[in-house]
Length: 341
Image 1: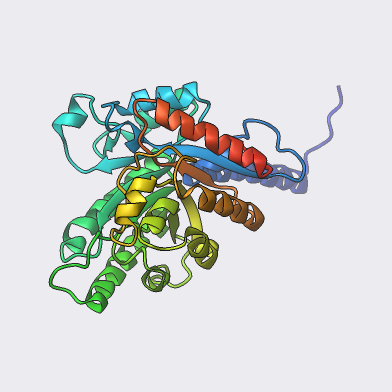
Image 2: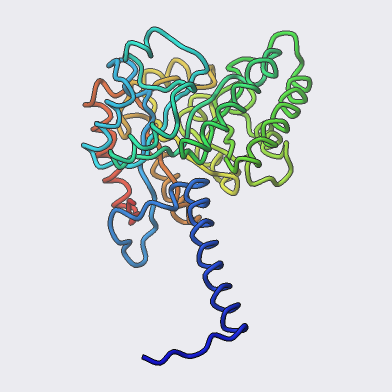
C-alpha cells in the first residue's frame, strides 16, 4: 500500500494537533477537579424551557442518629441524591473515631475518600469550615483552619468551602474593629482560595452576616474576586428577623450555594429577631412558617438562571423528617417547572 511522503509541514501540523488534543484532555481533567459538578452528567435530559437545579443535603441531619459519613453516603444513594455537604474538623474526636459523627476530619486521605464517594455516585457540593471569623481568635484559629480546609477541598473534589461569623457581637471589639479584622482575614484566605481555585462562601449565620449592611461589605472584602461568594441560608436570615426574599433579591448576583431551611411556628414565635441562626431546624421543609418564602426564593432563583445546589438543612430523625423534606422540595420544584439534575 502506497504512502504519501511526510513533509516537515505535515509533521508539524500533526504534532500540533496531537499536542492540542492532549492539552485539552488535561485541561478537562483540571476543570473537573476544580469544579467537579461540571464533570457529572445530568440524571435525566433537561426538558426544553425548564430551569435545572441540584438537590443535596447537609449531614447535620444525621447528628442525632449518630450516623457516620459513609452511612450518609448510603442514604444519599438510596434516595438518588448526588450532592452532599458536611463539616470538617482539624484534629480528632472520640465521636468521629468511633463512627458516631456524620462529618469528616482533615487527616482523612482525600483521594481515598473521593474514590469511595464515586462508588456511591455522590460528590461534595461544599464542605463546612464555619469557625466564627469575627472574634479576636478568628485570625488565630479560624484563618489557618479555613486555609487547610481549602487545600483539602481541592484534593477531595469540593468546589466550595463555607465560612461565617460569630453569633454575637464580639467581646472587646467595636463593630468596625471586627469588620477590619475580618477583612484582613478574608484577604489572606482568598489568596489561598484563588491558588486552589476553590470558592469561599460566606453564610448568614451570625451577628454581622445576617445584617444586609454588613454582609454586603463583607462580600466586597476582596473586590470582585469570583472566589468570595454567598451561601444563603433561608432559615437563618428569617430567624434573624430578615425577609429571605428581599435578602436574596439584594445579593442574588453573589450567590453560589443555598441552604434550604424551614422554621417551626413555635421557634419563630419565641426567637425571630432575637437570634442570628438555627444550628439544626427541627422542622421538615414545607411544614414551617418559612415555606412560602422558600417557594418564592426558588422562583427567583429559576428566573435568575441559578443552576446550583439546593442543600437541605433540617433534623433528619434518622431518615423520616429529611425524607419528608426531600419529597416537598421535589414537588415544589416540579410545580415551579424546575428540573432536577
